[in-house]
Length: 348
Image (cartoon, rainbow, N blue to C red):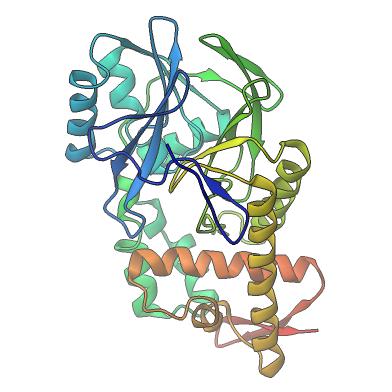
């Protein structure tokens, strides 16, 4: 293994990720593999933690034939001869929990996750077409997305929600502040917010290892979104609060094992970068609203200037609204009333 410091003082202990069907040891008793995703972010990291005579699994991938085949290849290949002991899921997004029901049944292992993750995924798996309901369409329209784009986002933009297998009927709940023993290690259960409510992170202070899920990624910011069921929510404020807590509580020399991209050292540096990134986006949003009142849809190209497909537009819109709600709460942005049924905002 080689280390490569970057200009940001982050260090990547492994520069080449595992190929499909491979595992890499990232620490004693911890394996890293990757599963493919059919999105712009084309992979999800899966970790296996030595657990007695087997492996505890951290996250699952989406539910599709490719991912199921990848798991079958792993257990018949590099994991052969040792059982899977339990499945720990960090949060409810389909790339992390999508195959949980299948894995739990296929290998007869319990699902361990937060109550929020279980119930949120249960809601998705029971009603994946819910985002096509009037509530959601009205939400998009009221923020200026337009009828044609609203139709695309409501139907094509959320196809990934179908990539979730039915969950097991029961689960084992973990909450922030718990400790969980896996093999010879004891992990503290931390929770993050903003990207996903009650997102589970596992920290071994003794081994200086943090399974950080999607709370902190090395090269990109995780999506931080407002959704129609909580239209005035402040996920960006919660996300920044979570980053500040990690920065203050986790030592800088901790090995960070994220849900996407490369493992790294430098959680203080990266958390600071992410906070600055979102503050910069808020500044750009405010500058645009100083020039003229804008709807949330008007602000999408300000923050996301590249061409977006329906899937990307749904996330971009919801993330723009997260920045709008955050600056509203900070008192820097104010509501400018509705025109033609669309809400506008202006800088104070």
